[in-house]
Amino acid sequence: ISDSCCLNFITRSHDPEERINQLRRRKIDLDIGFGLPRDANIYSELLFNIEFTIVCSNQHPRVGNKITQKQFFQERHFIWASSDHYSQLSTSVELMVAEKKRNAWLSSDSFLSMLAIVSSSDLLMFVPKFYLSLIASEFSVREVQADFLPKNKTPIYGYMHKTLVNDPTIRQLIEIMK
Image 1 (tube, rainbow, N blue to C red):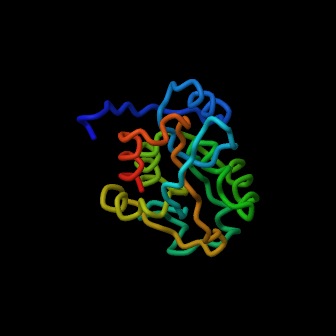
Image 2 (cartoon, rainbow, N blue to C red):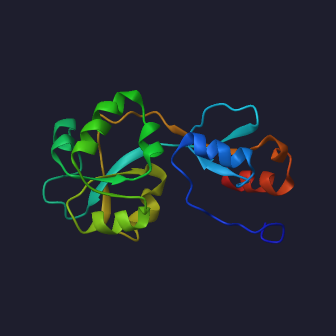
Image 3 (tube, rainbow, N blue to C red):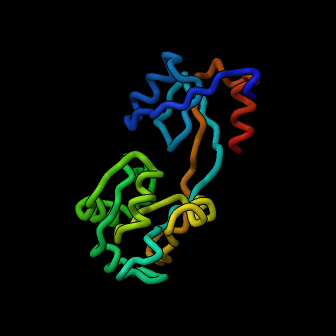
């Protein structure tokens, strides 16, 4: 793929309307993320689904292998500053998210920085479950079982301007991500 394009990863806006406008104006070719409102000029394709889980430090003083919803509400949290990250969680988690935001101690949009801080503190953090095997070998964190989390998976889409639907480079990128 490196012979056919130049990849430029940018921090995208968390505002859905701004994301759509950037696609409409062709400022970006491919937007990867949570669902956007429908737009006649934008094509979307499901890339994969993710399930979220909770992690904490291996040495967390109060949290064991499992956590109850009540205990979850009592613990301090690190919020991934991606607003769309939480907006896509199931409505059954809305109360948790509201409580979590009130009990947040830190907020960041740097996932790696957050993991480094969580690994050496008593903060909790939501992460995509498929990251567990990758982060456990690099950070001193572990998964915490939480029966109150929904088991449904969150879809991640690739969005592009409709004129790019059959672009061979875009198609190749989408197939790699799938």
